[in-house]
Image (cartoon, one colour):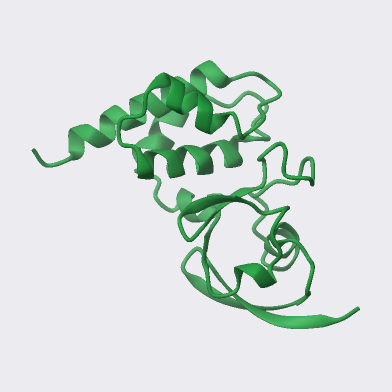
Amino acid sequence: MDLMAVTLHVNGSANRVEAESDIPLLWVLRDQLGLTGTKYSCGIGVCGSCMVLLDGMPAKACRITAAECAGKKITTIEGLAEQADHPLLKSWLELQVPQCGYCQSGQIIMAYALLSEKHDPSADEIDQAMSQILCRCGTYPRIRQAIQQASEMMRAKEPS
């Protein structure tokens, strides 16, 4: 087992970890940093439950190594949760989006990335972006509604 030291910038903090060169970021987040909001599900990058933001872009933590993330800004669901007043999180709770909740951290990360890029996404754009995250409970209509509501709330806060 060949370990290497890697500094990961996660949720605004620098974290020096020792990891195998090929270990997925997911396992370093969960096992070494205790950030268990990022979920393991398929392990092959299909379901999206492990979604994080990597330099602001969505990335599947089971498919990228911790070494590949050195020097990049990583945001997990825990980092977004610090923004409890964010319209997306408010809408998610108000509309009671989760059913089982397992995929929700990936869903919220993807929705956050979408709204960061498109302030007024269409239903089709929402569906296309969110199709990268598998929801076994089928809460897609509530997910779409929450994203639309958050988008409206965000636009209402924008200066005229």
